[in-house]
Length: 83
Ligand SMILES: [Zn+2]
Image 1 (cartoon, rainbow, N blue to C red):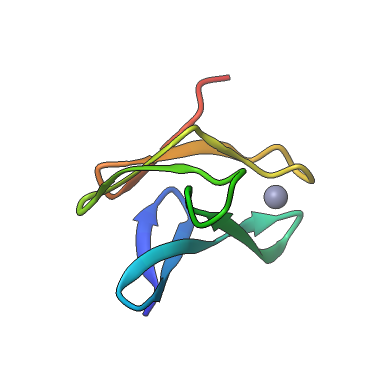
Image 2 (cartoon, rainbow, N blue to C red):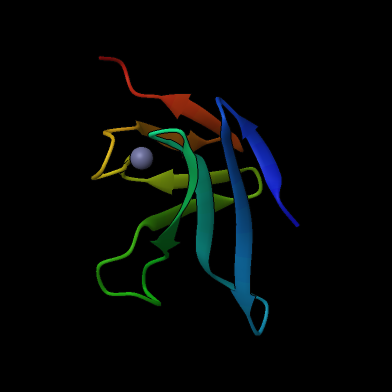
């Protein structure tokens, strides 16, 4: 189930045995909808820290390497980075 976080970002939670292992996030990237994978620590050694699962809060911020789209997921919402 996709969740709309606002700011043009949608996510889907991926669980394994009930544990949140990662988040797929979609954003508009050069006119196309692009999916990126956010791995959650400690399931991935280089993953994001899950500060809170509900409302979802991840650390650190998220940045698309292609288009520079940047922000963070905090309190279940997409907070765009200040430029
Ligand atoms: Zn992008």
